[in-house]
Image 1 (cartoon, rainbow over the protein chains, first blue to last red):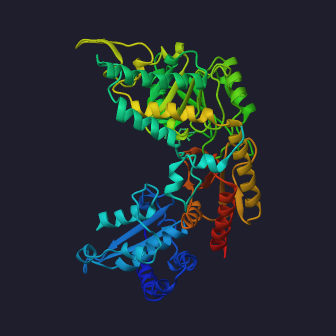
Image 2: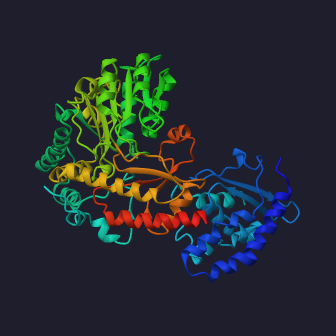
Image 3: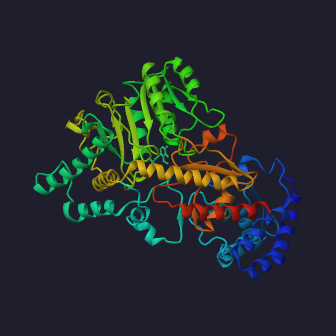
Length: 146
Length: 404
Ligand SMILES: Cc1ncc(COP(=O)(O)O)c(C=O)c1O
């Protein structure tokens, strides 16, 4: 069983990242500093237990391993996410995506373009369709689930 | 001959287009000299006609150019005859034809095939598709402690009497050069058919298929300074004669009625459909270009690049090297302790160093190494010492970011 509080804990961590680290990232001019922050983002998220790391949650198509959990609130219809990866940069990039879309309804999500932020921060110049690009695989999975 | 790197590099238009990148993904695909583009351009602009089919003189000219390329390959490998050269679309396609073709005439239920831990998926999955479902069994030569081909374990496994021994000439993931002369000699003595996957080996050294007494040798044009979409399956005539064609259609037949067809002679029997004419001519041009170079000097240069890179890596704390610097064809696989290879590769990409991260189409190898994968730096004759030094600086920056 996935423990239900992983979604509330993740939501709190993502909100904090959105409010504090994101503005900081926007200020930084050199790529080293941006990557330095990006690579620490994962530490703020709740740790997955072995249930979260089950193969059924693996996103196919990543060179690194990526697990994506999803929960939809039956009342508000909001979509919530939890995420883990064994690679730090992919994890940081996905966190920046999730920080923008966590808790959105399907209608709200349809109007969002969360990947634009990565271009703005010059973290991933282009989200290429390369099969090794975990980012694209996770984005596609989010879109498919919603 | 001497080795003039700037002059050599100038022949590769790619570097003019990307002066700010350092390309160290040469094991994935090589860049091509202008001579290859010229030959293909010339074919399309002045010779293009379908080969072997049409009655007109233009087709005969195209056929002559296409068959001349086959002869270039045959001479390059020292094959007995040019009909021992089968055009494929690449090593992968060659293996699929080979394995499919052996099933029945050569391999039957209960027969064994011997491969190694280091094989590329192209020398694993075709066996899964075409041979294992029919009762063929696959044995695997283990690695030594320093990630080399274990020759004594190989000798033991030969006692199981494999019908076919299929081994890579050079490991694409580690760069280690396999002891191919010993492998071929021992396998022949045990009565096996010997197949070498030359995808990474052919660019390292010249291969004499007769001297080594090889039964099959496969490679891809794009890893030999040639174009994509063309490859070679060399086979001894008597074994090629046995292979069942994987693809049926035009060109490969003698007669066809609605109830049956009889097959053409070699090499056409195994080349159904309109072949990659421009690709074959481009590969011929690549080989002619290569033969004009000092291959020994190229090899020497690549050895020196590997050596320099190794020495630099030893100065960077935390790096774990999976490949050794000796008997190495110019590929270095490494990891940063406790870090994912994808992270290291991304930080290098950010600094415009092109490398590959992952399991390099050799998942069973990394399972054997108990590793998530590696970052692979693969060098070519056109890489410079300056590029090695800049790569080492970039690598040190990436390592610092990941470990601080
Ligand atoms: C050792 C080895 N075998 C086979 C292949 C497959 O070659 P291709 O993809 O050109 O068919 C490769 C290419 O990566 C290789 O390195």
